[in-house]
Every structure is written in structure tokens, then in C-alpha cells.
Length: 341
Image 1 (cartoon, rainbow, N blue to C red):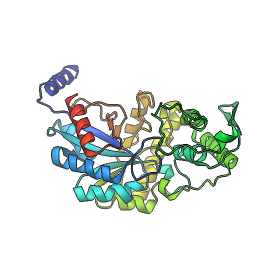
Image 2 (cartoon, one colour; image 1 turned 180 degrees about the vertical axis):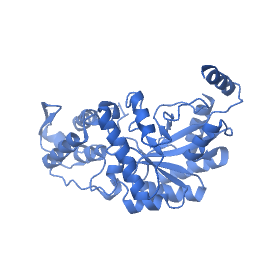
Image 3 (cartoon, helix red, strand yellow; image 1 turned 90 degrees about the horizontal axis):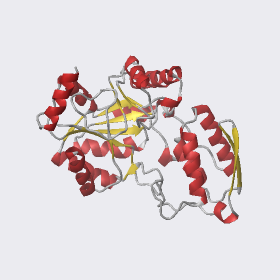
Image 4 (cartoon, rainbow, N blue to C red; image 1 turned 90 degrees about the vertical axis):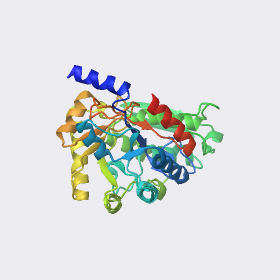
């Protein structure tokens, strides 16, 4: 098997077996603020699809994994995927995909379907960055330890500018932005019940309602069914509560993986066979996690590290390239670089 893998890699380098790539999106939406850089505007997404339609060979993820087993695909093949399961995947992305005739896979956080709350990172943004006036003192228990933060009256009364995002280092983060960054880092690895309890405490502290704004909500069951109805979009699973799987015991990982499949299977009346690891970096899941995904009945799983898909790529660790809110020309330049690399 090692010799076969080496042969395939040399074949790829010689141009005999062309690489494919998988693109990772999250949202298609016009947002007033996007601190996590998750959204591509509808205008830019339409430009992306024109680039893909004109110069590349878009495949469904299902077709790619079938061709992975058959050791064949055509040059410049690529796949579109979306993570999380925002409602704008149906409202904004699906009509543009349908008009271009380009397939995609949407990985849905099953526990968020029909939920009244937004994703935790959006909730944290709404409380800490958008609230018009916050108390000057915050006390929270995180991981069994009590933490205290203070804001000046001016800081507490000044929401974050809408153009700020987590990759922006100049100017230095304001006190609110620094608090957001710190709590985002702390909440990321917490178990779902503890994270939800902290968010409830934060909303009460800020005097803000907990229900999700329409622009931030996840798909409903009816919308999920509409998304999958014409077959152009494949629905995949993204766990139940979007945890960092590597932080959970294996039994808890198994529950997150299998329960997400069961819920989506039931909602769609058909088996869901693709999976994506939340966050998806190499440290966000374990080698044993891939085995749990396979045992649950999934045929493949997507990660979030940049690499080509080759004929010897592990179908349960498919790499992806993250797409930002670029115009079509910028995406075209990135695609040429990625394929050349």
C-alpha cells in the first residue's frame, strides 16, 4: 500500500493524476458586521460561481468521493461546501447555486435546527460588541474558576465599530474587543451545557433578549428539506452542538456524531452520508474520531486544513481551502495558487 501511495503521489506531481480541491464557505449574506469573517456577500458569491463555472469543473462531494474510490477525476475539479447550517444557505446561496448549476454540500449543526438561539459566536458578538450600553463590571465562573473584568464608563457605552474583525491587529483591540476575543477563546472548548449557561448569564448581565435575530438564525426543518429537495445540494452533518470534538471523551464524541446523523436522517427522510468536523483543524479532532465517523455510517468527512485532494487522501480527513469575502478576480488568483501548490 505504501508503494501504491508513493506511485500516486509521483503521478500527481507528473501531472498524470491531477489534484482536486474542496472549498469551505460558511455564509452568503450582507452583514453590517462580521467579526469572524464567515460571510461572503451575494454579489461576490455570484462572481465566485462565474469563475468556477467558466474555468473549473465543479463536482458534488458525493461525486468526488465516488471518484476517489475509482481513482479518477478530471483536471481542475473542485467541490463547494458550507459549514454550520445558517438559514442564508437556503435564502441566498441556493438560488445562486441553482442559477449556475453548481452543486454544494451544506454541513448542518443538527442541534441548531429549529432552535431559538443563534450560534454561540454570534451570541457573544451581540452581547459584547453590539450592545449599546453594558455594565462596567463582569464576573463569570469559567472552568470552575471565578473571573472578573472591568470596563470604564466610556468603554461600556461604546459598541465596537462594525468593520472590526478577529484578524485585524491595527489598531489594537478595544476593551470590548479584547473581552470578546478572550471569551471566544474560552467558550470554544467548553462543553455545550456550560457554554449555554455562561451565555445565558451574559445576556442577563447585558439586559439583552436571548432569542436570535432573523439574520443570524440557523435553518428550520422545513428549510432544511427545501434545501435538499432538488438534489443539487447535499446535506451533511456537523455534529449536534458544534463542540471541539478533541476535548470530549470518546463516548461523548460518539454521541455528538451519531445523534447528528439520526436527527438529520429523520428530518430529511433519507440517510446523511457526509460529515465535517467542527472547526476542523488537526488539533480539533483525534485519529479515533475519524473511526467514530466511519462507524456511524458516514462515507467521508471534511477537515479544515489546506491541502489538495489526491488519490491517496484519507476520505475521512478531506482537506479544504477556506474562502473569504473576495471578489471574483481575487478568488481566481487564489484558485490558481492553490492548484499550483
